[in-house]
Image 1 (cartoon, rainbow, N blue to C red):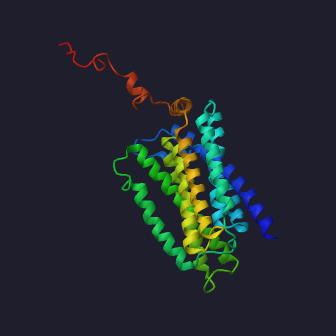
Image 2: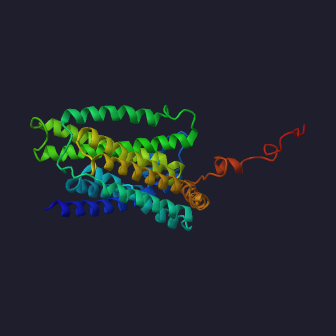
Image 3: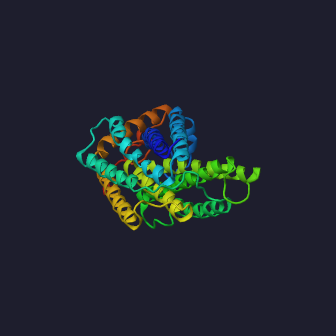
Length: 339
């Protein structure tokens, strides 16, 4: 297959992957909002595993991942990863439709800015060979450093006192980094299976180790994004789509020798396109529609509460607890109790 046809196929597969990820993100955000988990997240995984919608989301993520892996076979990392940010643009109308609202003008502006930035990035993507991959030693170093960074982000140590929103964005950042590293390691695994890995021929245990690392980062990214979506869809998904290609670009440029066209001017154009895309992401996160999504999420919580026989009302108190309150307990503050 000639390079032009390979690039076109990589773009097509990347678009299919973005659509799958977008559908999965919308499903995950609604499930996260409806999950009757404790404030510290305890029991959330068990509740999700018991719901069929979660497995549909997992299937959509798997389909998106398979299309993404196929795209990496035909195109370089610096081309495939930026196209993954289209997930945010696709999730925008899907999320609005499920929330029974219209996409706002600010959100459409954000989508256009994001698309413009992505087109600029694709235009200056360099002609690096698709077969380039990390060596086994580089893969282990990248995996170890990434695991430490993800642990710090997921624990909230790097967010300070950011509260729930800060923790959610930390989870989203960790999810995007995990997915980006999984993509880079996937290239290494495919090269190892094709016996085209730099250095000595890999052994079976080394190939198995790569597969375990990929599975670990992919699964971790999925669970971290689920935790992030408890704070909503737009902002966490935007952060995931920024940190994912950023992590992949760092690996591609620093270790795989990938670059941009036109030399130094290509780097300037790539930086400008990145700023344009970032502007679009900011607009998307500020777009109105929170009320509509909150109403839809409240309906999902009510459904989840009805299924378990309990239910949750404003303030986080169980409905059974509210129903059992007596008149004296609900007495206004400052009025003494009789007797």
